[in-house]
Length: 351
Ligand code: CP3
Image (tube, rainbow, N blue to C red):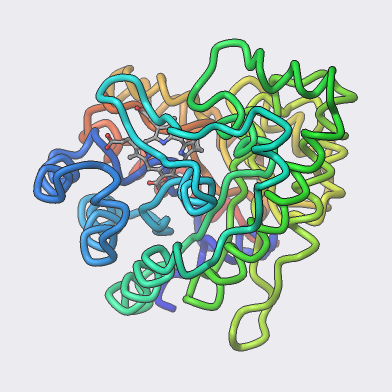
């Protein structure tokens, strides 16, 4: 591995500078991504072609000195493989043809045949080969709860009324979905690791919409099952795991004991405060507001310095945005961010 700063930082080991990658770094803000997506015909055709998924995974690394690659895919591939029928309506985001709402739908639900996700594992193996050890490759999955949100709502939602109705009226049904999702995610992440993923991230995008008690019972408990079920890599080494709960700042102490090596932090939490609260239990990943990239190169640099300063000296910080990059972001501003993080963190991360 030519650049292992990302893996080292996740394990709180010293690095020459703070590594950075960007959530949704392969995406619509890059003209070359839009060109490949056009060639594929649709987002799903792009995600399901190992060659094209590999191509777009590598695109941001050609432009920017990023310290990790993340496999181009989507969290909704798992419910799609469960037979829910994923499709995209232009401008409306993801939808499912057959959402899981009635007791009978839930009784039928099962862990998918991993062969249906072969295209993801093939994309990972191909990308590892083409990366030639340049930077590590991240695999990922949605959390059991975040997947359940899309499976029950049938798409995105403003209020999660259907999920929360089930949570309060029939918690037994939601628990059944979450148990199956956790088993599916464990098998999915382990297969990604077998194919070559060198770190894994669990995206709990919607856990932060829950009450404190419900978060612990319906989101964190199942992310912890997943974390406990992740195995070693083919050489027998520990695979670092990142747990990202958007809006999860109030649960950092609980998440620090979840079995994750690192916690993803959104921009609403101060990174210095977060570090103080988790101590030496986990590394931290984050946490610039994606909208800060709509400033100028000078304000982006100042914001990067501020965040590096809030984390402070010593190892255990992976720089990232607090959520996915907007499709309207200028690639030049991403360049300014990556350069600022690298230059202002040089020499700050010894043990
Ligand atoms: O980080 C990366 O570069 C890897 C690629 C990645 C995608 N989706 C590609 C994608 C990752 C890690 C995801 C995760 C994902 N997908 C999450 C969790 C992270 C988060 O953002 O909270 C969620 C909730 C989804 C579900 C999903 N997929 C939504 C809501 C959408 C629509 C987004 C939009 O802006 O319209 C997608 C589609 C999607 N997944 C796109 C990309 C690049 C845009 C699709 C396109 O090209 O038209």
